[in-house]
Image 1 (tube, rainbow, N blue to C red):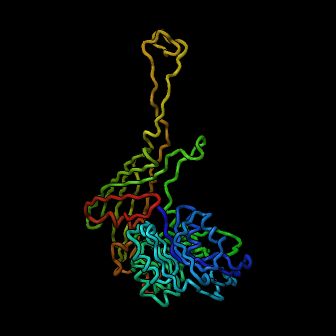
Image 2 (cartoon, rainbow, N blue to C red):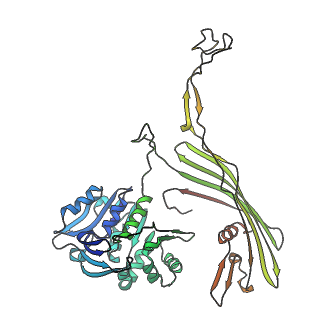
Image 3 (spheres, rainbow, N blue to C red):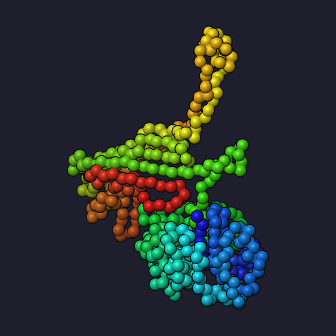
Length: 453
């Protein structure tokens, strides 16, 4: 599968810590497509003027980027001139010349309308909507924007976000669009607009990915000197989407360094059931039994049975409720990889010394009773233990009015806004299990694709 990248292709003049560069290739679609091309095929949709140099187009071709959607018009190419002063996270714009980009209204080639992965770069929200109308059934749509569009076309932008799967913004844009000074609260607000995921780019501080049911923080790779940060956010988004769309990796060996024709296809599957019961008005206990299946590629897979168990006991101390909780997770059988791919054929062994006539190997004993044939043997693999963990927690309600089950591990002081979380992950786990009824759950995940489960 390939990625469709829609955005700007420009000529940039930049004054950065690494020096000054004039009329260099830039633009959101440029940085995105060149980064994504490291992992997957990319097709770019953009517009340039008749002054756009051919050697710049050749850069796209050298990276295998499909440029059938790169339109060339009479006029000047979009140009941006800026500099960095002290803080490399903030660019100071000196001049902007839109040129032919001012009338950018892309018409997708017919072959582009079935692309499963689509990245809408930082362009007019109305242009983004026009592109979405031309797509048939995209699997994943990622949208980027900036403060300019947030200020001037917020309603149009919200309509785009409603139809997106992933919203990528920097931390300042997230706060501005979400209307919150706190980044985490702002990202939560953005999820309410419709996307399944919000990706906040924090420059030298890394990035945060948030969904309705999880948060993931990724630190930045530390460097001592930054030459030019221009396009870093678009490049990061390109790498992010490119990896999600990366085809299966072909297996190589020492004897077949160029590939064996087989591909890795990692796959995880989990199914189980849980039961919880109020043993008394103060004591709750539950158990979860699950079947785990993991597949490395083709026929090589392993299975295990796991158990989770936990209990909550609550009482009172000084007229305040206090709770004790205990949980043990992933206690069960070991997992060993097996499969036909591990089978190999071995010939008859040679038997020598002290073997009576008629019982030796036919290759050394002409009087052997039977001729031994080739046999199948299986290669031995490592045995993996389930990641067993034990968690213990205690909570004490400072305010009886906060006696909510889902928050019993959160200690709060309303007047000071102070909040202390104790093993919140355990809380969420117990909340899901201890619902006083039996239920069946089924989840599946693929190592490369974002899926709902």
